[in-house]
Length: 391
Ligand SMILES: CC(C)(COP(=O)(O)OP(=O)(O)OC[C@H]1O[C@@H](n2cnc3c(N)ncnc32)[C@H](O)[C@@H]1OP(=O)(O)O)[C@@H](O)C(=O)NCCC(=O)NCCS
Picture 1 (cartoon, rainbow, N blue to C red):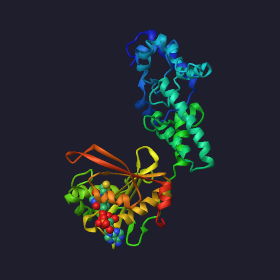
Picture 2: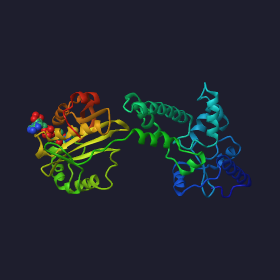
Picture 3: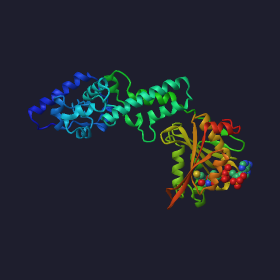
Picture 4: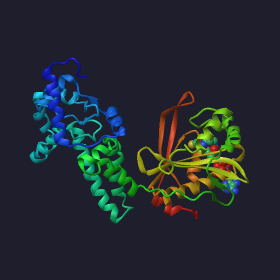
């Protein structure tokens, strides 16, 4: 990239590389590290070289094995500051009451060390600091009482984000082995995303199959495709589902995916169960996380038309609800449905869920703007109402 440039540029480039090695030491970059860096950083733009060499812009974040300096994209930051010469004064205004912190933050920024950030700017830096502090406080509470719901909410927001709030998972990049070496330890993602999830988000998937009075609940198997396809060919069955009718090939492929080794990463995505009555599949009940929120599961059900009206779906859903609270430890279970789906709304009522919302024309389905209901039940409501389902 610096081919054909003059001696000044080559000298500046060597200055930058030497400075980089002084600041970061000499550590190996694995092939995976290089791939990560190429994906998330850009080769140093030649026009920035003089400013970097002169210490007016941050040092590169990485040096690739071929010596290419790689930098974070600072285009917005330099533009908003009104040019490189105003960068320091613009940056420090984000910490107006905190001169000690700001100089440390500026030094880290100028060293090119904010490599964990998806976007390097003062707002993201402050947000990561805030979210790490929030996570730290929540973890301290949860180590005493893992069921403290305020701390769960606070930790959930810090790690996964919430309404209008980006959590650490969205703010920080995966970690390279190289960074663990040069910074001498685990990264923010290691400590405050991965380790926190491993410690506090530990769904306990049930032993399958589960047997109820009349049903066996088990995983989907490839041989379920034919019977599922019969249901999915029925326009009445799909009337209130998001998908239209599916042909045999489509259902067979979907069944293969649900049952194969590449099935969704349960238990971190939720749980899918096939209801089987007298050896024949008759429907599904599913639990899946409601967005990033790990304290809430959404429940869903489909009963094949020939098995309707006998209470099978409710029998299976009661088990799924108990699993959600007892095995997945959530504090809330929700169901979203087409408001015209009276059978499904009746299911929610039988399960003791409350209708929390009737949204008017809020989603487009099957050629029309459609009303929807949201039903929900909190843990304490379920504990007060629960029937004797043992899972
Ligand atoms: C939604 C759906 C699962 C409801 O099915 P369902 O048959 O009404 O539900 P259940 O299996 O729990 O059966 C309950 C009915 O069986 C009756 N029943 C008969 N014998 C029973 C028994 N031994 N125990 C309990 N209920 C019994 C109940 O009285 C009830 O009937 P009612 O509503 O007329 O009073 C089903 O309509 C369906 O899958 N539809 C297509 C897919 C779909 O829309 N899914 C939902 C998307 S949000």
